[in-house]
Length: 309
Image (cartoon, rainbow, N blue to C red):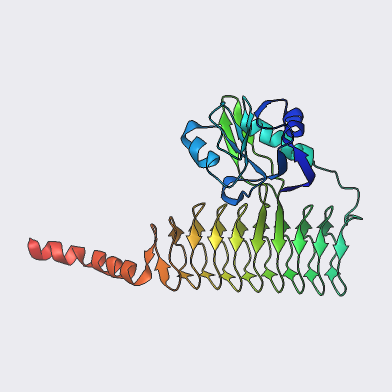
């Protein structure tokens, strides 16, 4: 998430009320999670296990819970609770604004687009030309939808990321200030849920078709011309490259990559990154030909045991 203007390190420290290491006028352009940070971004870290990863990331401002040696060309924001203060910044730069209409005045809707009754279109939403949103589609603030997109009833674009920190009193949610971006010629079935990024974008690439009752987690990037069948669940921060096919009830873990033109058969659990151009099946996931051989061999075990007797 980029800020509306460049801020100074001192200004950001004043917003969250913390000490800092670096020049007062050190430039701060935005804030992001570690897998998408760029120079000028703030990244937060609150566990020594991940200090080095954060300090050596592309981010040039590290929101951290201990004063450590600061790498050259970077700055520190030293907080007793970086998770909390990352939320403070999200609230400051991307505050929740209550709706006062079913279609916000700030929404931009292209020529030829049809919005069926009982849809909700939030603040600063952009919808392209010749789209069709069927009844009861919900589009949260800041979502971007391209041209020639069809979205069926009951689908929700832009709900919060499922991202929590466990505390003694319960779970503390990491607030979501990102967006959902739907590119041109995408089709989305009924009752799908596509969560917005924590600070970046959850993206569905051009030409991709999604069946009914599919969930796409925060900050996931789905490539172009993919096919995703019903009841698939895609976790957060997944990269699905172009022309991937996911059949029904596929589930994934977070932070993995599915290579281009991979085919994942139904009810597979994708527990690790997989190469493109191959077919996969099973949990844990394996190439389908190998997995099916293993299942055939399992069926032979009773006969083998009888022969051994």
